Amino acid sequence: MMLGRSWGMRVGVGMGCCKFGNLILLFSKKTFLSLSWQVSLISVYSCALVLLIWWLYSMYFVPKLHERFSFWVLLKDIRPFFKKSEHFHVPNDDHQAKHQSHHELKFHGTDGPLQTVYSSEYGASHQHWHATCNNLGIATNRSHMSGSNVGCWTSLTGVTPESRERSYSATAYYRPNSGRPNLVLLSEATVQEVVLEKAEGEWVAKGVRFVHGEKEHVVTAEGEIIICAGSVQSPQLLELSGIGNPDILKAAGIESKVDNPNVGENLQDHMSTY
Ligand SMILES: Cc1cc2nc3c(=O)[nH]c(=O)nc-3n(C[C@H](O)[C@H](O)[C@H](O)COP(=O)(O)OP(=O)(O)OC[C@H]3O[C@@H](n4cnc5c(N)ncnc54)[C@H](O)[C@@H]3O)c2cc1C
Picture (cartoon, rainbow, N blue to C red):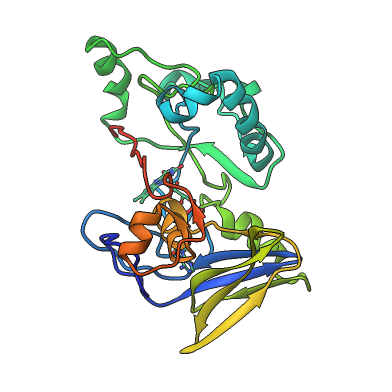
């Protein structure tokens, strides 16, 4: 794959794209890791490569967004989607007392497709986790899905309670819908570019160019194209399509179509201790 700049990783076999009605979704089956960045190893299934922790990122640590939107606006906009996707299984009283599996039901969904549950067993160190943090001045956060995950808390997992199997986008969303006639999943394909065409003076995304079976294809969209190639590769794909900082694109020999210097910038990782 042509890289517009050094992204510090190699993109391997097994990518794909998916046409869902009028939508085209981009994803991949296998992406190799290198140096500092890990990217998904599993097809389509965003949220497959996780430690199975179900959490909502802390709104306090989104300074760039925070400058534009208030904490509560962000919370209001994002939370409905978390709740809609979640089926939270409430721990019993014994579990709550023993493992400090605190929660506030109003911040959880109860009939979504993704199953969330507290672990049934914890390692020996967990019994000291809260007290140790508290002694260090780190308070227990009794509502870590409220919009702030600052503090010490017991993590929820994306796991089906009965079978204790992972519950994620593949099991919750793809499998139940895989037989639908308007859903096509094409694995082993690498998207190279979002094809833009000019309409009334503006660039409009019309399709995607991808390689599958060593052949190049272009698929067009009647509706929208959703880029969901992850935090690292989404901006990469935008740049490869001519959307980004013109100076960077020029240096990489890519025609600049949409001038947006924010593409590929301002990435922040999160910190936590387990
Ligand atoms: C080791 C690890 C552990 C994590 N643990 C947790 C956790 O416990 N809880 C949690 O909430 N989050 C966790 N995360 C973060 C979580 O995995 C991501 O936030 C989430 O997967 C992002 O989803 P996404 O759909 O945006 O992107 P991704 O899941 O990265 O999906 C993007 C997909 O697009 C594909 N793709 C990229 N470029 C192309 C292309 N050109 N053509 C075709 N396909 C392409 C990629 O290969 C990938 O499959 C973890 C992340 C890592 C790395």
